[in-house]
Image: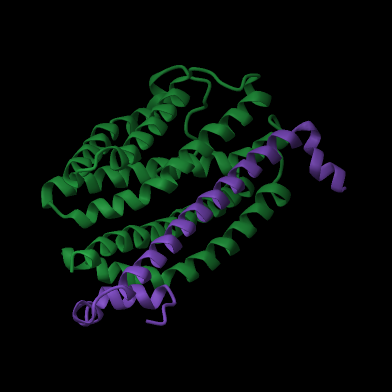
Length: 235
Length: 76
């Protein structure tokens, strides 16, 4: 199974894919921005401030998704002892931390006209802040520890322990009284959002996902060249 | 019409700043990662050209090294 995770194979695919993903990202983002800023209707209650949803919600979804993938890969690192999985999860983290930051900042901007405050120690906001701290610790562990095996172990432990925070973020609106409304979109039930708003939301989510793929491809190649650079000096 | 789009019924400052933060974040991360990639590619090229003939012959036959050089636009 791990022959598919062969660094040479991934590097070759990455190099060919980067330009295609970049082009798709620009195209989908342009359509998404047009829809989100100009074509989608305003909300009857929140008026135009609802447009912030088109950057806030996709950023939050993708930041949670990336951390979940990192945690799964970290479990696999311990199980299969495959170092390439560390390289994959390390390359996913930069876009994950950016999306968490975007979710927090745009949420704060949205909070001011909607709730009348920039920040509240609400369960969901606090758990998102914890996610930002976890991402920071995860990335820092590669810089702090010089011993590669140690940094790999510690980063994986952070990801595995940190994954407990994911269901807390997801269900915080159901478990506690928070300023956030319960989920409006479900995979199993009919969406509470009208299609005129759902379509731009999906397009923006696709654009954000493409961006994280693009950053992953570039970061993976960077990390692999870094390793091969060390290999050259040892030849 | 353009003024309406900018002001967005008084919510313009919030909406535009949220979108601007997002796009600036995208651009910054892309530029940082691209800079790191180019830096590593240059370092690799420099290390590769400094190899002795014997080590060069070993390295040039490895697929991954060939692929890295190809992608960095190297003339080696």
